[in-house]
Amino acid sequence: MKRKLAAALAVVLVLTAGMAGCGNKSEDVSADSSAKADTKADVTNEEKSDGDTFTVGFDAGFPPYGYKDEDGEYVGFDLDLAQEVCDRNGWKLEKQPIDWDAKDMELNSGTIDCIWNGFTINGREEDYTWSEPYVDNSQVVVVAENSGIKTLEDLAGKIVEVQADSSALKALEEDQKDLAGTFASLTQVPEYNTAFMDLEAGAAEAVAMDVGVAKYQIESRGGGYIILDETISSEQYGVGFKKGNEKLKDQVQKTLDEMAKDGTFMTIAEKWGVEDAVVLGK
Image (cartoon, rainbow, N blue to C red):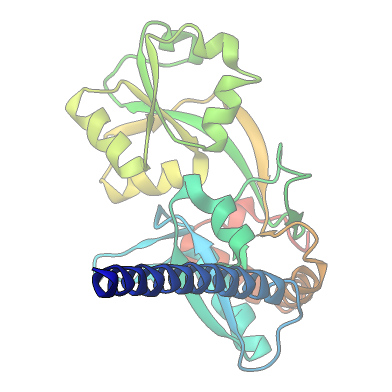
């Protein structure tokens, strides 16, 4: 009986020691992971050197600034600008598509070095460290050509769609909330391809969006839609870095200024049809 009791106690001690060991290992792994995450986040606050990777976070459904083309490649005006910046600094560009709702988490965790994708400065001035504005942009409303909608006032009682966490949504929830109050509904969608499909199917009667994206979407669909003359709001685009990351911002800004001075910036803008909106260097 004593032998059985002693054996049972020995098993309990072994199991207890094993559990304690697992607990310590878990804590060590957790601490190690946290340390690595902190280290990665800190790296984004340092100057980059030749051969370093520059990771740009962007919405892959936001043409002509950043999107996936028919060949499955990530392309766009902002991505071309970022590539030129990398080429001139000896960096390797990493194009990182992100969920727009998760952009702050991606930036603050160090997964990306910046948000560069038709990113509006206005209303976010204190949330990020910004480059200088490089594009002027307006929020507009797109409707079907034969809808009979000609003015913002005509949107009363209509179903309007907008991208989640977009500048158009912010404008309609704040400065233009009285206008939005006249809509039958203001529906958020994940990206504008969905909004245009809804518009085509009659599930939506108008889409509020950036003018540059609106022009691209209409042209790529061969027409059939118009942009209302009245704008919802005006804004400026910049490159957003983690708050306090002045060193990396300065490196990128210096290169952008050089590109504007030698004409490369405007050449890239003309390629994507946004030259009229460029403000950097003017």
